[in-house]
Each structure stands twice: as C-alpha cells, then as structure tokens.
Amino acid sequence: MPSTNIAETWKKNLLVQQIMNYKEVLWLNGDYFMNNEATMNLSLNEKDILEAEQRLERFAPYLAKVFSETEEKGGIIESPLTNIVSMKTELESRYNVSIHGEMFLKEDNKLPISGSVKARGGIYEVLKLAEDLAMKNNMIHHDDDYTRFSHSQFKSFFSNYSIVCGSTGNLGLSIGIMGAVLGFNVVIHMSKDAKQWKKDLLRSKGAKVVEHSDDYSKAVEVGRKQALQDERSYFVDDENSRNLFLGYAVAALRLREQLNEKGITVNKENPLFVYLPCGVGGAPGGITFGLKTVFGHGVHCFFVEPTHSPCMLLGLMTKQHSNICVQDFGLDNQTEADGLAVGRPSRFIGEFLEHLICGVYTISDNELFSLLHLLKDKEAIKVEPSAAAGIAGPVVLYRNKENHLVTGQLEKATHIAWSTGGNMVPEDIWYSYYEKGKIITHK
Ligand SMILES: *Cc1c(COP(=O)(O)O)cnc(C)c1O
Image 1 (cartoon, helix red, strand yellow):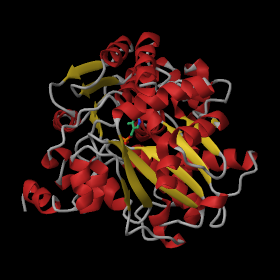
Image 2 (spheres, rainbow, N blue to C red):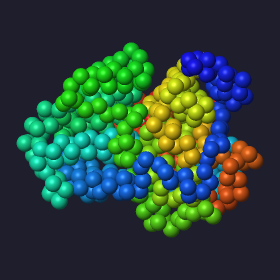
Image 3 (cartoon, rainbow, N blue to C red):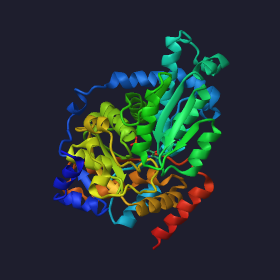
Image 4 (spheres, protein in one colour):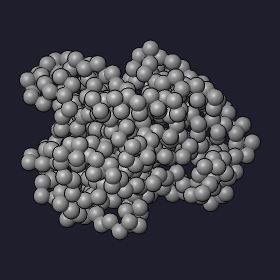
C-alpha cells in the first residue's frame, strides 16, 4: 500500500488526529514488555556493549592526547549526572503536579569534543573504522599503545580514505571533528535546517560540507549514494548503523556507575524513568537498549519528539516505521530543535525497540524554549532547544498517571531527563534562545 493510503486509514484514529493538529500528546506502547524478556532474542546483547566499551578504553589514551579537554578523565568521554532540585520544584509549581523522587539531568550538553549526545555514537563509529583499517593493515594490535594513532604515518594512511555522512548538524560535528583529527577526508551532507555556525565550524576543522536544499532524509540519501561509488569511502549510516547504536549504548554502563556512586538503587520496586529526545532514533534507541540490558524491568524509557516532527511516534504506532513520514500526515517537519527535525524514522531502531520503549510524547517548540530559559535561571545550565525536551517528561507522566502502564510505581521513582546538546552553541545564538524563552515563559 502506498504510504499516503496508510496515513489515510490512520487518520480516523483520535491520537493521530491530535498529532496532525500539532497537539502535545503521550503515546503508550501497547507492546511494551514489563519483564526481563524484552532484551532476549535481540540481534545485539550485553557482550556487544562491553566490547564497545573496551574499544573506547583502548582509545582513551589517544583521545586524552589529542583532545586536551578529555585529559582529566583519562580520555573517557562522559557527562555529569546532575541533581536538578530547583528545576524540579519549578516544574511542580509551574505545571501544578507533584513529582515523586529525585530528578536528574544527564548532561550530554557538556560532553567533550563535540558537545552533544552524538559524541557517543559518532566518535565511537569513527574510532571503530580507524581501528579496523589499521588492524587490517597490521599497523596496530589490541594491546598496543593507541597514542600511536596520532603519529604522522597513521594520518597519511587515513588520508587515503574518506568518511561521508548526512546530518542535521550534530552528527556531522562529531564525525567531522574526530575524522579530521585522525586524518580522514570527511564529507558531511547537511540538510537545509542545519545551522550556519555548525557548517562554519566543520569547515574550520577541515571537513568538506555539502549543503542541501532538502531535509535530513535527502541529505542522507545523497551521502549514501556518493559513498557507494568509492570503495575507499565509508558511509556513516545514521539510520542503520549498529556501531553508532553500540556507541550510544555504552552510556548505560557509565550511568550505572554514576547511580551507584549516588547510592541510587534501580529495580522493579525502585524504577528509573528516563526521557530521551529523539530524531531518527539512533541515540535514544542505543541508550534505551543499553539501559534495558543493564536494568531490565527496573527502567522505563520514554522518547520525546517535537510536535512538528513526531516520526518515531508515527512509525511505532502504525508499525510502518520508515514506510511513512510526517509529511504523509500533513505535518511540516519544521522545528528549531536541531537533531530532532527528522521526518522519517529508522526502521532498524523502530523494530529493535518494539518491546523496549515504554512510550513517546511530543512537545512544542515554545515549550522547549521555555524549559531552556527556566533551566538556566534555576540551575545555571545551558542547553540547546532539543536538549530541553526530556525535562518535561515527569510532568507528562504525572498528568497521565491514571492511564499509565506503570501506575503504582511512581512513589519510589527516580527521573532522568537526558540533555542531548548545548556546549557548542555560540554565545550570541544561545542568548537569543534564552531571550525567546523568557518572553514565552512570562507571557
Ligand atoms: C541527534 C540528536 C538527538 C537525537 O538523536 P537521534 O539519533 O537522531 O534520534 C537529540 N538531541 C540532539 C541535540 C541531537 O543532536
């Protein structure tokens, strides 16, 4: 059936009608598994995540050497887990809800090197490629000192290869910065919504930027086609990459340590609720896979998308995944939330998460700006608009308490909003977001 016909049949659905009117909605996944079987029978498992973690550890001395900001943590790219008490109080009074338990912000806005969640998957994927190529050519072995990757012979070897990817901005930054430092030729295909400063920054790092007058899906398609024509060209496939996915999943192992340090127990009786901004699905998908693998039915993950780009929600709900796009439902895919302006979801992610994801909610751009503003005022934390999306999570959950899949578990809950980016936003641009949020908040 053509996708527009599929959309037609779904238009009778009440929730779909609300989505089509750009309303903020919560969708709960009827296929969610409330037991530990959710991660059985998947094509990836804990061993794959551990392997990815070990690879990042091998590269840590190299990263500490070439990126001085990672030196302090020995080349491990990780972000703080911050208790946001004042923001939680603000949410409770502003939205007239009372939220049980502590609320944390997972501050990927502060991730070193590229300042967004993409530093997890994107950098991992580039490192894996570099290791694979170097091993194939007998230039390195697992137990060698990986600082050798900074030697000129490695750089000139990698200059024979190119890395290509399509991006709305942040993935391009991660791939571009890491790839260029290793010596690769990097070509980033940017969608029309990509911000000028991201293109400028990438070019200054030595990456080639190809600008498209179309949206994200088109930029990816052109990039993929170009890379296929050249065997020395490697395509980072944001929609289908297992490497990206595993790079994101490692976050769960690190989060487990951070929660341990804070004395927070996670299990069925003491559930953890995690709210993750979603674009094509890779970052929130990989993190969810990691968390479900680590915490089983102790953790419940929600995705959040802009009201103008709810592609994963529509893909999951209709089970059509990449068969459909938001435009089929008359939605315009216009949002200020970089990284979330995606009209067509990944099939790989949607199918993989079928039983793992608890639900998806949507949020308006105005609300994003408002939360960005409040987070600065209450916690002195600066994030980009997309990164604020998860902060609304507990409010949405408590507003819909009565029909909730996990009702009765909220009393002993811990909440984590995943803040996905912010560090790289130029000061003046960030300030314009803040000012916009101020006006909306006090309207
Ligand atoms: C890319 C991105 C996301 C979502 O990641 P996907 O893999 O596209 O789902 C969320 N927030 C920010 C800031 C991003 O750049």
